Amino acid sequence: MEASGPLSKFISRNYRHFNAASLVDAAKGYAALLEKDGKMFVTLAGAMSTAELGISLAEMIRQDKVHGICATGANLEEDLFNLVAHDHYVRIPQYRDLTPSDEESLLARHLNRVTDTCIPEEEAIRRIERQVRSCWERADAAGERFFPHEFLYQVIREGLLAEAYQIDPKDSWLVAASERDLPIFVPGWEDSTLGNIFAAACIRGAIKDVRTMKMGIEAMMALAEWYQETTAKHPVGFFQIGGGIAGDFPICVVPMLEQDLERRGTPLWSYFCQISDSTTSFGSYSGAVPNEKITWGKLAVDTPKFIIESDATIVAPLIFGYVLGW
Image (cartoon, helix red, strand yellow):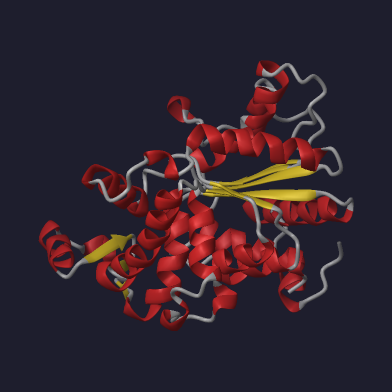
């Protein structure tokens, strides 16, 4: 893919060495996979939704350049938080100077800090809670079961929060995903604000059946089905933002199919890129270089592999912009 738009041309001319060169190589590899009728699976760790990655990721989804997502529960819900409460967020540029007393003052104001950005509890979390809980309770009463993202798709599609939108919905990756019915996999969802709220609802008895929410093992089973169906027709790449469970969970689907289910000949991931500043010291899996994944049966010797050791809030929008031809 040749650089076409002003951003792409700027990147091609100026990003020539070190992490900058890796960024260009990864972007070109991403585009090359799509040109070969490939599909791309994106994983979201960290606080990328609060960092408003949706501005570029939503367009990637709309233009059919992202075909599946694995996200933490926090990234899933925080895109929706930002959608309905953006004007109430509080940014603290000098967050490194905060004292414990300063942090306690933020707590007293019901502001939940994520680095330099505070999420307002009432305007974001409690507003979402009321609408999502009604979907949970409706499913529970009907004996229906859904994955976490499917409940949020219901909230969006039924317009339950539409009057509260404070950003253009075209900048919400979750809205874009709901429009395309994009498959989303959320491991460890209970490690999220809405996950905590769901657990509390079960403890109180407001939700009678905890199985109303489909969770981890079922998510892996659904991913296995998606991966087999997709790789039967297309090569599938793996674009990992950050480390942790969002990346570790889905990449394991290949050795599970090959080794545990003994489905020999399962295609390996056809592209791999990770944006991370994790180091490889002390057995850090999140900082492991791509070649280590060869030994686990996830990548092949000739799989295009890229690692960009930098800030994903800077790197990911640039790569997306390049792929979009901006």
